[in-house]
Amino acid sequence: MARIHILADHLVSQIAAGEVVERPASVVKELLENALDAGAEQIDIVLEAGGKRLVRVVDDGRGMGRDDTLLAFDRHATSKIESFEELQRVGTLGFRGEALASIAAVSRVELRSAEESGEGHLVRIEGGKIRAAEPVAHPGGTSVEVASLFFNVPARRKFLKAPRTELRRAVEVVQGYALARPEVRFSLAHEGRTLLEVLPAEDTESGARQRIGQIFGPELAGALAELAPMKLAAGGRIWGFVGDPTTTRGRRYFTFVNRRLLRDRAILATFYRAVREEWRSDEFPALFVFLDIPPADVDVNVHPQKAEVRFRDRALLEHLFDSLRRGLQLARGEEPVTFTRPTGPPAAPMVWQGLGGRGDAGAPQAWPAADEVGEGDSRQAYPDSSPRLAEAVYAPLERRPVPLTGRSGETRAFRLLGQYKGTLVLLEGPDGLYLVDQHVAHERILYERFRRQLEKADSPSQALLEPILLELGAAEALRLTEMIPELDECGFSLREMSGSTLALQAVPAVLGADEAEQLLLSLLDERVGESEEPTDIRRRLLDALAASLSCRAAVKMHHPLTPDEMEALMAELFAAEQPYACPHGRPIVLKMSDTDLEKGFGRR
Image (cartoon, rainbow, N blue to C red; front, side, top):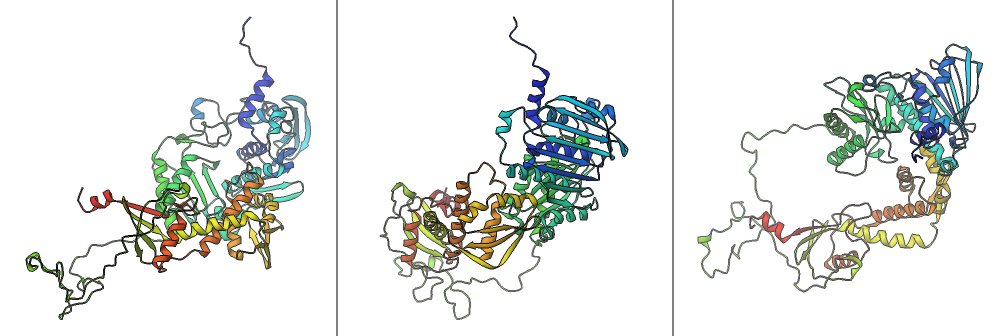
């Protein structure tokens, strides 16, 4: 007998569902895309238990007739495309005809739809099997209820996260499509509580900014600079908004291609590169970028969940890079400067501004020519009787060895040369010149001290006379409320208010109110995901708290240090766990090797 056999249809459907339906947020995404493709002007989403128990999406789109309501649940049944050529230029959000079939295979689905108000049709499916198909009264549009997700696939259901975490992921999807389509009214409710409600705006740049303000608050909307609009040769354009340096929290990065919400790695990599080159920073501001391009120039059929695309013209990313750089300049209040070459003699003679004196005529003392210095002349390079341009100061040759390898215990003899502009400590090493940033060196030392202290006991807190109101997006508010128990242990006190507003009522006693607010908002970073345990969140909070304290208390730039203070600073720095980077990731020590110095002077 043959060992190869054909899988049963229901098993094939469940396997296919694993590629399309990962969690309740996947169901929300697919149903939203269908509603938008149907021309909906109003979409209402209702969730229960974060979507694990129920997802309901109601729209006022075109609706479906009796035959279409049944065909919609067949695999690869779609009204979007009919040929491979149409697949090459897909202009709709959905096109594969897999979503409803996959969802119905792993849940209990009830669809009601009507092309005209009154005469509607109902289809009820359970685990891929049709249980009912009958006429029903229904207003124009479609309503889809998805209940008991993965009820027949317990292994998949076991891997779903807590309801609040699944809810946050679903809210992020709704927020994304609300940003993509400002002309559509969206509402989202969870177990009777409205989490998001946005009114329609114009489908223009001003309407997009207005929608951003509806979701994230007017403060963020006002801190955005427009990207330089760029028309593309093949048609279409790049436009959007980028935030100023005050918006570098929460990872608010939204990218859209033909109004399709994406998390495209190529687009984000282009954004990161633009920020690093333009701002010289790894702190990335808010981003809302829209690429409206001909459908034939983008392949949307490269990812099971359509989360990424492939551009047929690779130059598009360079156009995006140029637009982002100009937007980042505007976000920092910078304008291009035109440089001109000098065409005539300078208005004033250029003179040496050294420390030494001048001759009788007011000119700097001249360096004597070689034939002016006789053999054995004690003057050597300049007359002893003349004031020197600068006084050379040499540290003693004998200095205590300073360990430069952290906790390994190895010591190497370094000689303290001095301080440069009250900012850098200069060390002569056996293989080159070492430059140490005194501020970040002291910051590293204090950070490790504070972190050890904070790990020993709970952080005491102080109540604020007036609570600080945090205006957040719905998903961001959910993310912080998930952490409230861990935040309480670290000295923060948060209370949920109406909508997406949280009130900060108490902060750790060692922090000021503004510092505590910024530290708290830094937790909105998406990298603090649902996989992190409470202990991980607490450790991250304590690390951030220690970093904030150390930065505030560290010795500042342009602060003179005595030789003994410099030696003590270097000794403690290189006994630290990580002596080469500050808590924020900036380098502490730079080295100029003997070889580099000799090359600079043309000796190699």
